[in-house]
Length: 241
Image (cartoon, rainbow, N blue to C red):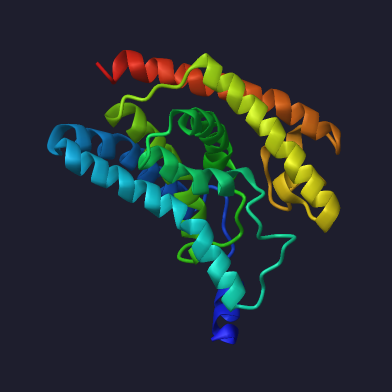
């Protein structure tokens, strides 16, 4: 089994930026972003709305544990690569607290983290595996379905991001940055892309050399958080009436 899993993980077609599979994933994302809240609001009772929300939370949550299991089975698990010390992994693990438990504080954090990460996930996904590899689905479920879930929370559960939530999210981002930095020093790793830029193209390529791109990314993150809040204002004004 180990050799079969290892062969599967390492045998893939290379992902092409803005190729067919990339554009298809973005189109499916846009469809779900519109369809699921509409369908739930117009076709489902409260009980079934919660059931659908729970399914969304579970689908996002299980991505990371399944990945870990595959790496362990394939004999390739590495503490330098596979710990939950990238922002999207932590966000995925926390999402059920929002979808199932309706935790307001975590919702505020994930809303700004999620929509900030969405901008890069749409334009420059940091994956190398193309459809139909597991990592292709893992990436787009972890990022795109995360955003679909957060919009679902706003539209169906009527939870709203706030400016206080924006502040707490930014503080949380920097605490996570500190934790990742300490882990990187201890493990000689590169979690959260703090020690060097990711090998694939990303927005960090335009933010200067190390370590200055980290400081630049702080301002980019704050701009993304502000844009996410503005998007919510538009959603509230035009779609939640």
